[in-house]
Each structure stands twice: as C-alpha cells, then as structure tokens.
Length: 261
Image (cartoon, rainbow, N blue to C red; front, side):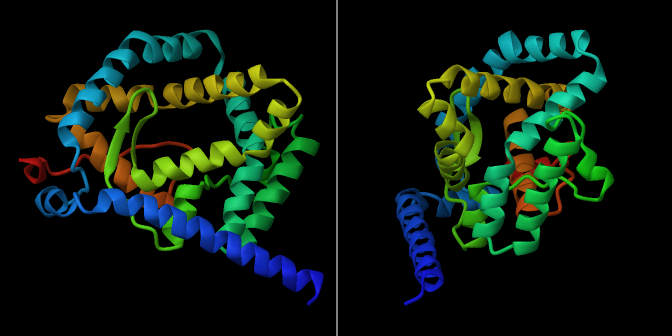
C-alpha cells in the first residue's frame, strides 16, 4: 500500500468517524423536533427556553455589544475597519480551506489558499484585500457547512448565552472549527492565549458593527423579533451552504408572520 493510498484511506476514515459522531449527537435532539417542525417549519422544540435565553442575550447586547460596536464605528474610520475585517478573514484562511477540502471542493480550496497567500504577501499582511481585485472572492466556510454537505441535518434550534442562536449541527461545527483552528493551536502551544482571545473579541466587535443598522431595524419593526431572527438565521445558513451568500453583508428577509401564529 502506497503512502498516498494510506493517506487517502486515513482521511476517509477520519471523515466518516466525524460524520457518525456528529450524527449520533444530533439524534439525541431530533426526536423532539417533529411537532415543532410541523407547526412552524423550524426545529425549535426548546422554544420557551430559547426565548428566555434570547431575551438575556438581547439585554446583554443592548448593554454591552451594541454600545461597543457603535463606539468602534464612531472612533475608527471606515478604511481602518475594513482593514480589520480583511485581517480577520485572512487569519481564518486555514479553517476555510480545510472545510473546502472536506467538502470535496478542490477549486474552492485552491482559491482560499491562493487568496490567503496573495493578501499576506501583497496586502500588507492581510490589511488590504488584494485578492478580491484579482477575482478571488472571500467565501465563509465552516464545519457546520461541511456537515450539511455530508448530509447531516440541522437538528434542533438552540440559543446559547452569549454565543447566540444556531442549530445543533452548526453549534457543533463552530466548536470543532474553534478547537481545530491552527492559529489557536499555535498560540496556545506558545503561551500566547491572550492573542487568541483578543482575536475572538475583535471578531465579535467587527461582526456586531457590520450588523448595527440591520439588527436595529429588525428590532424596531418586527412583530416577533425572536421569530424574525430565527427565520433569517436559517435562510442565511442555507445560502452559505449553497455558496450563494453575499459575505459583505447580512440582510435577512422579513418572514410571513402568519407562520408563527
């Protein structure tokens, strides 16, 4: 058996193992989802608890996240904020590329690797998005999308404190991405954990600043803010999985509220 064949066999076994482990986890919550799905179209069997956590997160957002994001936008000029976004995206290159590979998208994998190298080399360590000018557009890829490509269903909708809403599948994918992130592994192995946590905080601020107007509009105009964001979340995740998302912004559709009565 050649080394190349062994490598492919090991990779295949690892992928199958991850798939079965995740499927086993999701099965714990799927049995409670049938009634909720029939009523609303979403797997939200824990809705009363989810709404309570959602309210807590909303209070926390109004008290902390939103003011910090507004201050960030007020103090930091738009070009500098764009540079921060570019750096954060460049730092995510290994995770994006790995998920492209796991999804069997060789062209996407090559594009992500090339994009990262171009921006690091010619874009002042990622501050300037040179690659987009060369038509190497940024695509967000995560292990939740990979699981979707492998046929793993969403599972129940779960709202976690601080971390917010996601399906069980996508929460699992987020945890695996965070744990396996090469940058995290390097920083933790070199006792530079504070840099990793700083990156997490900056990522949160950057994303919250991007959504300032959108979330405020939804909060003020939605008949049911929770239901609106739940619908928007599923639409966004589906578009990402199908590589149809405009990753420059997140503008969800307003759902038909008759679905939630």
